[in-house]
Every structure is written in structure tokens, then in C-alpha cells.
Amino acid sequence: MKCVFVTVGTTSFDDLIACVLAHDSLQSLGYNLFVLQIGRGKVVPESFSTESFTLDVYRCRKLKTGKKKATYSGYK
Image 1 (cartoon, rainbow, N blue to C red):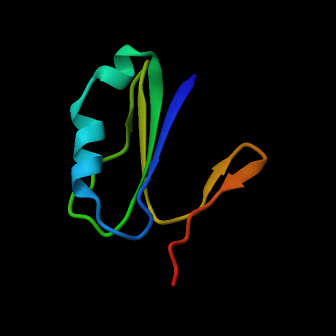
Image 2: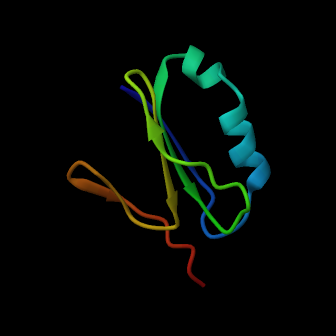
Image 3: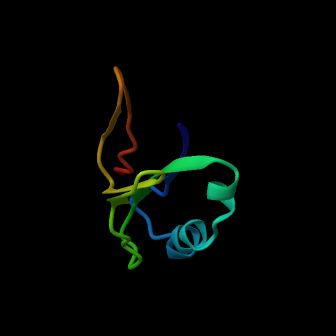
């Protein structure tokens, strides 16, 4: 499984999130898991899963990946 992880911290990067979601190019390269960690933006996609593709969307929280944790807090 090939994964793309996009994180924006606590800020708003609606253009980046919209761009990642608008293009099939990453899927055409064989990526079948997108993990988006979004901030305070207005673009809030729904998580979904099919047989060949999964989109996971989180708002600034810890993401567990196997035995290791990838975190981004964005706290000041």
C-alpha cells in the first residue's frame, strides 16, 4: 500500500487540501491511501474507503501508525 500524508498543522491551507483532492495524479501513480491532517480550514473532506482507495481525514490530532506515532500538535 502506497500512502500520501499531508499535514497542515493548526493553520488553514484550504488551497493545498483542495489541490490534493482534485487531482487523480497521485492515484494514477499507485497511491491508494491518503491521510490528511487538516487545520482550521473551511475545506473539510469526508473520510471514505473503497476496495482500492482510502481517504482518512483528521483535525489536528495524534495519528497512530503501527507501533510508532506520528504527531503534529501545532501548539504555541
